[in-house]
Length: 61
Image (cartoon, rainbow, N blue to C red; front, side):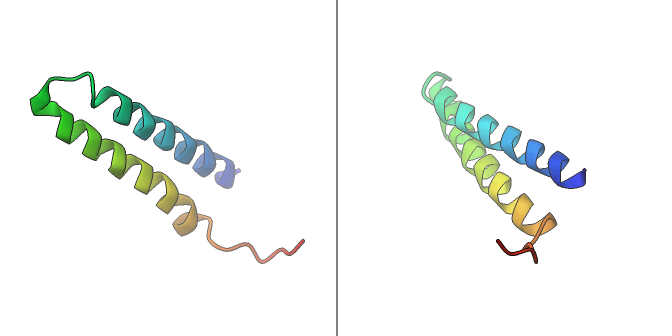
């Protein structure tokens, strides 16, 4: 069950990061850099979380 929660959180973070990329071109110029940087950080964390908390599966195909 915890793997599902981690996966849902990771997917939500990834979608949030993609939204930040899009919003970076619509916000005022002073906030564009921070919005885009927030998108990069959110996408990076969304890929980092499952690798860290779920880890490598010992099951093989």
